[in-house]
Image 1 (cartoon, rainbow, N blue to C red):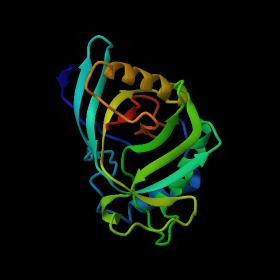
Image 2 (cartoon, rainbow, N blue to C red):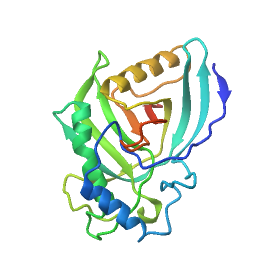
Image 3 (tube, rainbow, N blue to C red):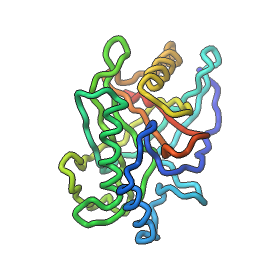
Length: 228
């Protein structure tokens, strides 16, 4: 059993996984619409205030492994999703993220920019040897003010799906995360959970990002194993 550590949400910036480039059109749409939506969702990023996190958590440290992890409850709701198959994770993410960003920026039936919630997560599907299948699904939680009636995506590859709340075991790391980093940290997290009562799904886990590609320092990435 690890010892308890406090969890303090940090100030978050606009999230993009890995080093995914933000298309100029999406960036322009997103930032231009900020002024049109002054009443922001509490999860919307801010450069001056710390938003309410989508998850509440309890942080644990396993001394023998020097790996910290949290057991975290993450709220459900309506999500915009994009699924990509037959491509490695890094390449699939570069394809999926611009579609999410354009939807958020106003490429929808209402032409409205919604702002961002953090983190953006994407599901990956491990093989028995720990490598990842060529399949990825990005999940972006619709901001609260649009939860009851989300704008319809103009891009048919962007879907609106309902997801129930989940509890996860989460570990955090920095840098520009790539597929190999997610695999390594997922392996470390599984090792840290060995010998504990923790049980989790083995056929899927989530990777998350909190930061835009232009943020070189203090980056935050996570791996989530879904508690069963």
